[in-house]
Length: 435
Ligand code: GLA
Image (cartoon, rainbow, N blue to C red):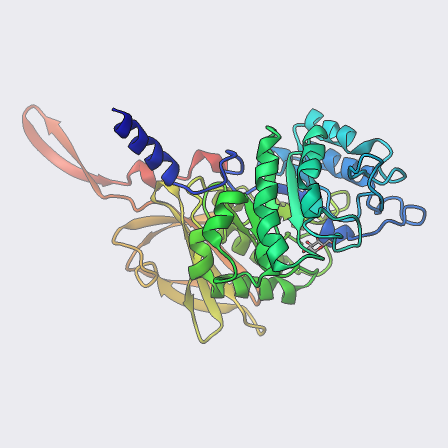
């Protein structure tokens, strides 16, 4: 009896080795200050854009009033340069009093009142990357408790000004300290990014047990070359990184820069599509007060978000790398569905790429393909060749429904079978979540 209960419990918990805080079963979504607003603390000259409580309240207003929150973008995350250069007289971190006169607790309340969540930033070392007070080993419990007291919902733990052995001790310790506060706090670890992102230095099994997400690689910048460099690294290392991801534990290729200055419309679609294939956290770092309609419609695309947020939480992979510069990415989704992305590295003109679903390893059947950026749909047999036209540095992204089983529906009249008809099984429909 005892044994069977034990076996049952261990099977349940063994199904996923995620950090046991129940959080982030799908990749977290929201807004993060760093890439767009950096360490601008010059509120005298730049009151709208400096790192201050006003900036975070402005973004919260936009998230809750412009349709973002309903799509899942609920985190408003403070990054570096929020704190005072000194801890308080009890050794606690404190917000810069000029730029955050209301304090962090009040800011958290502001988020919660609007159905949003607040994230904050710290550093496992002597200083943050921007030179603000870090969290040395002796300060871990105090800082975790301070964040919990402030009702913070997520914590990004950076790794500047420390070393491998301090990190090895500190990152697991912070995980325990956050859990011990009793407040659910999503935990984002920059640890692997400071250790090259790959085994043997990085232990992804352990990371999945202590962190909800982790930065594996360098910082994103506002340019296409940065997006491409990051995407290439993640797909080149997909065999190592893919198995690390799952509900509650995600690889983080860094922020979405859609809506900033560096990406064309096609490149913006590419970042969105590839981040969805990667099951990446979707933290926008842009100015939601002035974002263009085009960028907004890419970031608010329900089908791409639905693919990113698929409950199965399997990270997708690159399955084809053509000499022509076309690459194909695939992600399995729940309900026997999947996503395909056709991406062009070319720099000349739209390229007509010909293939078929069976060439992309799909099993026999009839599928529906929904183009997520044009909202068009078509029925495709696995064996039928098709052509997609892919713009330079752009993508075509498809949601592919489960194969329609060709069901024989029988018609009876009296006792005699009158005939049969094939129909598309209901698996072949678009999930309701997309409407
Ligand atoms: C590091 C991190 C960035 C950002 C900055 C802040 O570079 O990787 O994401 O947090 O520090 O200084």
